[in-house]
Length: 540
Image 1 (cartoon, rainbow, N blue to C red):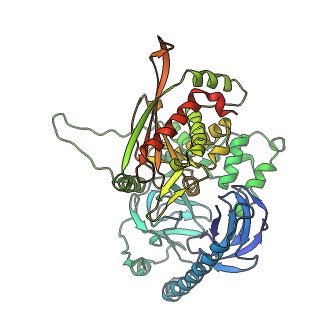
Image 2: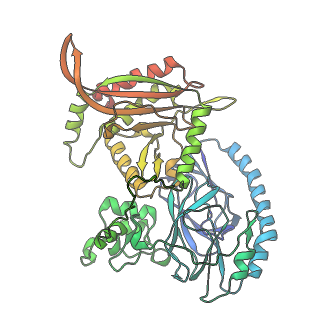
């Protein structure tokens, strides 16, 4: 299915972008992570990576031309796919975007810019995901009075998808913080003010009106959390300086075991990009200490964890402010449970053959397959045989997905995220294992991209590693079903009329009755059971 790629907002003040160079042509094959184009913003020229795979079917903005943010930049899809409907719809959207941008420029931007002292820049809450309407400042990594260089991380911001680092595109001194840690605000709200040291900004913060509200200046300096007290793993060199690298470059470096502190970046401000890692030769540098993580720095301080003293016999409670992630989890699960008529089907699966097969598979060098990987593979194959399970409910129609994108629920510190394995049915067991480990690891380190949590058609949730033998999950909409996987249990079983010791696992399928009838769900579970109990059939 074709995907529309729009002009991204690559800086907090960007309203339009210019395509400096296209690095791909119509008809070229696109792999996730490929550089599509170089885009000039109001700050710099930056590489724009693709988060989609397929064929480049259409270029909407030729090299050298300028267009507003959210204009049609490109379309990626299957080779030969008809995109005429997308092009006609995009033309209408483009006109609306252009008109809206002109109105914004006339009513707000020009007035605000004219009133700012020389060198002063207002930084607003960025839109870090396509569905983001507000963001929460998780952590400030700079405090009022700190020097800020282009590329420095100002703050970590929670979106509706993940917690992401927010880089500064400006240089100067951090003069003002508009949103305190833990507080949420709509996109385009006043986040910070950067400018020359000592600049009087009292009139700016008080008169800054955006999103329908005026932000009043704060009289006391914002409370911040220093880098040394942050447990989020951020790559830093041994001299304490942050290593700038694109997400793709970091992933390739991790896969190849390349020490980022040894690589010289050729990108903007020394940023390490994909080609730097691919062209890196270890023998060309002297050995250097491996980069540390902030978590490692914290360990060296041996700082004791804070303890709360509770007098014996006294009633004590505390409130923990809901994170943006927790709010979204509550909202979406409540919507799912109260709008989709759930029912659950449970089946017991014999795991003896799966255990034998896994042991053999994992004897292959550089191969590591988990039982969860085997379940995911079995689900992908079963979904191709029972397409109604791989569906979505709409008021006027049911969408049957012929592609299989399985979401894998991952528990993180603040809640739950669901990274997605795109086109799972085309992956081998070892590919599934490698991708799941990569996504889960980056999920726990808050490094997932929003695009990596979109587009699932089915979800798998596994609590077996916690000893939970059976449970029911709430459907991850717009999916029609979610599979709950329990622990493998050794127990007496009947085989050929004899009671013997066997290993079994409980699977529970939660279904949306609007799209999946009971018999359909039961047939899917029977097929799933056959694949898991006979793993050789998954290797055919």
